[in-house]
Image (cartoon, rainbow, N blue to C red; front, side):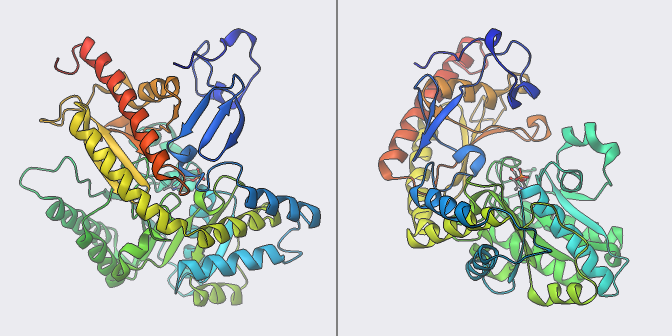
Length: 462
Ligand SMILES: Cc1ncc(COP(=O)(O)O)c(C=O)c1O
């Protein structure tokens, strides 16, 4: 077993000190990383079971990306996009638009998912003003749902806890229920519940006044907020119909699900009849090798805004030259190594192994997701679906136990865990069958450790 990291006494300040109580056990300190492995300064090795925060899609230390970084660094790292165009920006945008497919022709490139969400909302608002629809400004989101931590992105997220604290700073928007599939209201199937959730969107638009509603934002395959929620197929088509009927733009937040993770380049590609108007991406776009996000828009909309004076938006590091070169190299590798296909194949294998773990474990209530964007939901009782008491902070405890077994898991709760507690299982898209086997073997041991702890405390039946 891996020993606890160095005690607090000798430490310097790190980012972790903003979130961990004073005196808490230190997190391992990263020394180097290669492939699916993260190695700390004590030489302990951790298998990256969730690609950091579902970002490291190519694993670590990928030679092609390191070479692209070095080559670009020797030419130009930074040139401001209102002063110079760059080859790296042109190549990256062209490749991204081709992979994203028709109607998503123009990427606006920023430094992360939250910035990309802000960019999508501001662009759509400015487009509405230019198009003579200035009454439209409201963005409807889902509860639970997550779109980022900047104030605008948080405003459209469905996180009761964050809204308790930051609510006074946010312009409130309507939220409609996300079509959760595990715990259903009485007399509902997953499909009838999902259609009721779509109906709630229609009612919210009518209540607000369709002429005031700008957009609906949703994660087509959920991230941490819902634990890789995949809605029944009928939901997507119905949401698309409702948005079209009311002239409301449909934004898919593919920050986590995009760039191949679900076994298609976009999760949207699983539902071709429900094509969104705008897609937001980040994470896998640069696979953790550079800060990167993008909002993808139809060319006609971009030309309209540009002709009317230009998009009133941007950041110092928009379309950063080095980051674009990294993004282009990452997507080139995704294409050349067929990592989208690998995500589909390894996703099926991993899903089968997680289902087998769930059969054997008293605390896995549900396994869900698509491709390599998977989650397991933890429960105290599989028959009743009773949650593990929230104050036990189950995902964080499992994260700790996992580190001791050489497994790195990503945790973050939405709405204080009131919708349930789950673990994201999302290894790099480069994962092999042997690594899938090792990941699930270690995860099984970790969950056995946790089940034993819960049994000893009487939370889980003996
Ligand atoms: C679905 C989704 N949207 C937006 C974001 C925000 O992205 P970032 O942390 O890069 O700002 C995240 C981050 O986890 C996410 O999962």
